[in-house]
Length: 507
Image (tube, rainbow, N blue to C red; front, side, top):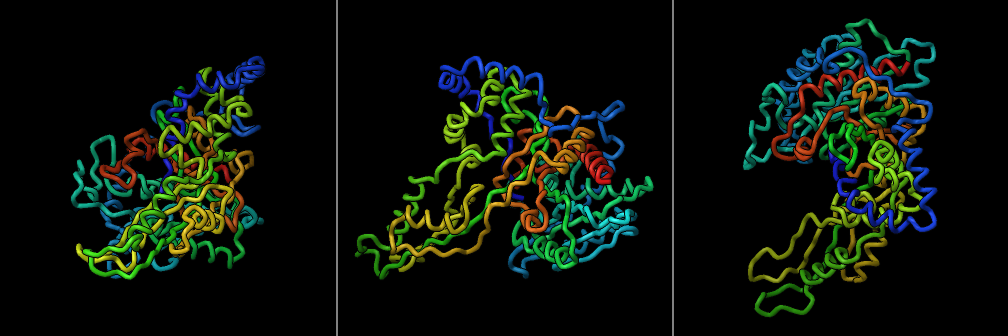
C-alpha cells in the first residue's frame, strides 16, 4: 500500500484560523456565524438520510473476535511474502505456504466459497447470492497479502516477520499493510458462515499477491470479472483508516474513506554529452544539464487546487470540532482559497493533497570518479492530482524544463481515479458499518495520495472506495512501510465487526 496519511492533512489548520477569520470577516460575519452555528447542531459527517446506530452491548466491540484474529495474523506475518519484479528473487514457498495456511485457518470459507488462482498466486473467492437477481448488485472486497521488505539494518523492537504479540499489538510487516485487512475480512466471512448467514447478492473476495510492486494481479482479476459480465455495485479496498488525533479540535476518531486516489507517473529524464576525462570538463555536460532540469522542477511546482472531496472532508470534520474550525469549514465559499494556500505551507502531506507532486527518486551519471558522464538520467516519480492527466503532466514538465536536450520518456503510469460519490447508497452503507463498529467516529471522504489495487476496478464500478477499519494513532500510521509496523489487537476484533455489518447490510 502507498497510503496518504489522513493525520497530517489538517494537522496544523488551527494555525490559520485567526488569519482566515480576519480575511473573510468583512461583510460576511453574520452569515458565517449563522452557518457555523447550524453546523454544530446538524451534520455529524453522515450522508443525507443516514443515522448512526451505535452497536449495543458492553465492553470493546468485537472482543470475541479479537484474539482469534490476532493469532491468525501472527501466523500469516511469519510468511515472507515479498514480491519482486525479478521472479528469481521471489521466495515462492512463502506465498504457497500462506495460501495453504489460509485454507487451514478459514475452513468454512474454503468449503463454501469458490476459490480461484489469478495471475499465479492471487486469490479470487466467489460467494453466490441467494436471490433470483443475485448478480444484479455484486460486491468486491479487496486486500493484498504481499508486503514490502524488512531492512535487516533497521532496529525493530520485535523482528519484522515474527508476528510477536505483546498483549496489546501484533507486530510485524503486513500487520497494517495489508494482512490485517485480509484477516478481518476472512474472519468476518468465516463467522457469518458459522451463523448460517448467506448473502442475497453475489460477493467476491479479491486478494492480491503483488500490490506493492507490479499490481498486475488486480488488473487480471478485474479483467476476469469483466469477461464474466460482473459489474460490481460496490468495491472496497485498503486505504483510509479510523484515525485518532488526526484533526485539530476533533475529539472523536475520524473514519476517512478514500473516494479517489491520485495518479502515478514515472518519467525518465535523460541527458547526453560527449563524456571524456574529468580533467577537461565541458560546459553544461550531461550531469549539469540534468541538474538544471531537476532544479527547474523544484523551483516551479505544479499549481494548487482543492478537490471537492477535501472540501467535504473539512466540512464534516469542522461540524464536529470547536467553533473556530467550524467557523471556517462551514463557510468554505469564503475561506477555500486561503485554506488551499495554507495547505502549501503546513507540511509535505497537506501540500501533496492540493497539487501534483514531483519527486526525483533515482539518479545515475558517471561510472568513475575521474570520468565525465556521457549520459545522465533521473527518474521523476510524479503523483498526479485529481483533474489532471498523464499527458498534461508530461507537457507541463517539458515546458518547465524548457530544454530540448533533456529527453523525457514515460516509464509507466496511470491517470487519477474517478471520484466516487459520498452521497450515494454505497457510501451510506459504509457509514452504517462504521457506526456499528466505531459508533463515535466521524465518517468523511478524502483523496488518497497513494495507489491501491482498486484503481483497476474503476472501469467496472462507479462506487470504488478505499478504507481499512483499523484504529490507528500517529505512531501506528507512521509504522506503515517503516520500522515497528504493528496493529492493535482490539482493532482487529472491531474490524471483524465492521465487515460483518457491511456484508449483512448488502442484502
